[in-house]
Amino acid sequence: MVKDFVIGAVGSAVGAMIMATVLSWSLGVNAHKLSGQFSATYIGGGMNFAAIGKVFETSGELFTAGIVADVIITVFWLLACLVAPLYLRSATYTHDTDKH
Image (tube, rainbow, N blue to C red; front, side, top):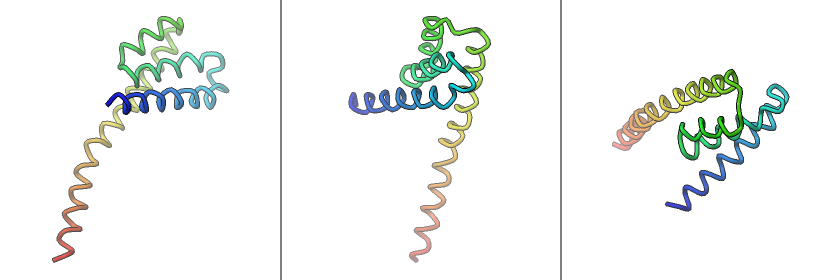
C-alpha cells in the first residue's frame, strides 16, 4: 500500500510540474505556487492546499481561483466515478446475454 501511495504522490508531483510549465505563460511566477498547492491537495487533501498556500503566500485571488478549479475538476471526476460502474455493468450484462 505504501508503494501505491508513493507512486501516486510522485505522479501528482510530476503532473504539477508539467502544469506549472504549461501554465507559466498565463500565471507567470505564480505557476509554481498553484502547482505545489494542487500537488499537496492530491497527496494529502484540502488542508494541505491551504497550508501550502499559506507557506507560499499565495494571493487571495489566486488561492480562490485554485479552489474553484479544484472543485470543478472534482465534480467531473466524481461524476465519472459514479457513472463508470453503471456503464460497465450494462456493458458486461449486454456482453453476457450475447453469448446465449
